[in-house]
Length: 444
Ligand code: GDP
Image (cartoon, rainbow, N blue to C red; front, top):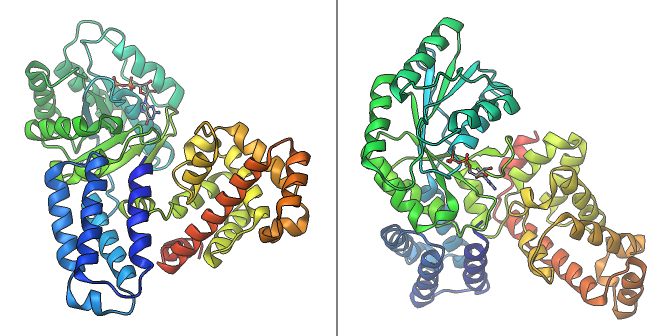
């Protein structure tokens, strides 16, 4: 996600930062490139226009061009505008109503609605300690109700018993009654998906919404749908009062346009993103972290949070400290590789770490899988302790030795070295921008 957008923007900004002084023309040229990069990432045209005109106006302001670090300032302006475009702050669910609080899940078929319902149920139960009941109102697609029941079992979240022949509004009412009687805090209603915007199903959804008075109406959209995702979101938001959006398949190769346009198009925040097919693959959406990621600085905070769930806190702190210093050597890199494997492999983490893009590029077939981690660990194992700490020692002769020792090629060694170098500089950049302040705060 955001891979090529991030690459394009980092390129533009590296050039800007590389100069001491900037003219208005330099800035305008950079903004033209930003515009093209956003359009290529499938961001909706009106959103791009608005965004670029806002940042251009700010960036050519006198104080910016005359400042000591104009390039840096322009990047900061773009960063702030990106955060604003993505929605400023993490948006929690609003469940502070008389229980049971109803969450209505809406979206197209195949968007990941049922899976996301189960993910959300699991999260509310495990992290927020809510008593959650789920019910599928999809009486159109065969076995849709059974699908939710199965996912509910996997997530250990109860689902409403299925009664054949009941209509959606009746099922919703039965779920609410059960929930009241049995003291549930939250009821998640998974509505029928549709293949495309279909008025009958829209009416059914509105009837359910009217009768169940949801505290949250969440639109589930597939991030891979690009421009279509934007159109889908617009149609839904015209028909129902959405309170938020969940973007699924953020682990995929989406170009990012959906995420960037969603807020402007629906007026509602992205509340969560789906990050894998597994039931724990749901994360809160943090606009600031995503903006960091887009600007090529990686999402170190999410990474460390994720890490601290799976690895010892000390390790996480040590890693964070290294990152804070803007340097880490091959010993750290190796430790990271093995942690990554423990944290569910590369897929889950691919976009979080600065420079993982480079790992991807570094590998001939563009595939990032766990075998690559094993291979890279082998290369690092074949280095001497000195080489691991001071990679600059690794000359041509040493490369041949390391390649032999690890059963790889000099080319692969070169790629690993380049990747390490790029990761270090990404971290330095992050440090300069103060992007890890939050991280340090978090670790106390
Ligand atoms: P529905 O028709 O909208 O209810 O969609 P489903 O919940 O049945 O999901 C369709 C497919 O998308 C399933 O194979 C899910 O496992 C998959 N899926 C859902 N969310 C995600 C996600 O965030 N990432 C990935 N990789 N797959 C997902």
